[in-house]
Amino acid sequence: MKNNIVKPLLLCAASSLLLGCGSGSSSNNPSTQASQNQGSTTTTTGNQKTGNGFSITEDNYVASASTFLNTALTTALPAAVSQELSLPEIRVAYQASTSRSCSISGDVTTNIAKHPLNETIVHANDSLERIYSDCKDAFSTQSGTRKIEISALEGTYESDEYVIYTDIYENITKSDRQNASDNGGYRYHLPVVYGKTNNKRIEFIGIDISRLNANVVPNINFPNAENKEAEHAIANKVAANPSSYSTPSATFNIFAFELIEDNTTLDQQVKYRWKFDITNKDDADSSYSMQTTQQLILEERYVDESGEEDGDNLETVALQGKFNFKMATGEIIYVEIHSPDAGVTPGTPIPSNVVVKLDIYGDDVIDYQTGMTWEEFTIAMFGFFAP
Image 1: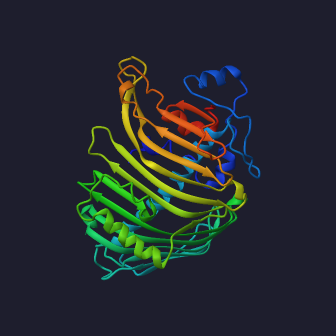
Image 2: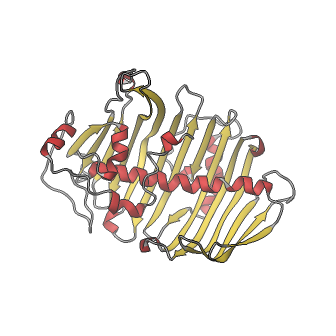
């Protein structure tokens, strides 16, 4: 996947940043407010709900939604991708167990199960486990285990044409971290599906996709496995060992995420679906749920905004999508994306095509809304855009 699409999304690394990134978006400059509200519809009630130390208001609902989105993607995607990198290591392993010393103190033991061990092929039931024994480096001290197990494999992984079902486990305690709030236990079990087809031009990552809405299905077909087979394989595992994701600051009670990268189109597309239910351990009122009701589709394209010969800019464009965020205190933020294709022509910038709406009381009445571009939405968490 190209960095242009991923970079603006990988901004907040964990849900503990909710309070830090989700505020500070308001502007006290009336002229700035007026220019940014141009073209939007706003209805005010004069009321707001207040959580224990955090509130969704007319001033920060856009920044909050941006933070929630980035939290979702920066939690789910790295969790899957980092473990996917273990697959080649299993493939080329020739020792069942190895140990190494950590940079400051402690050690890490790696155990690999593969039958036969000397064969450079990945099999079902292969696994890789790392055991951390007071492993201290410049960033923290870790103790505990990380493990990936291959539960099923369809196609041939070695030829990059496959669908592979894995179970990922982590039970790690971190200490000595610079940010004391990051100290504590990290626990998860994630059933993850990887798929590649069409000479790697279509790639798929799904975390516990059986939890996603049944009426929303991906429009990518992998020749070696139907989606129902993937969901069936995961559902059996989940029934016996429910998936979970937990950090020192939050617990993801429902953790479902899907990414499809499609390079077969003229402009590269990345498609997302997710469904999360998050309990904030430090502030229950800041707990929230989020899910897509329509697949989010992003695309890279060149747009000439300068009118000069060398003025082409590679930008990430949101083509469609609908998702919402519901706070424990009842507020709901809706994000709607409409295709900007009609306005994307050489010499013109990408037009505003993202609408963010706030329902303060959860009563299906929109109290505030504003429009913006996708780029403005993704950086709103830093306070660069205020409704």
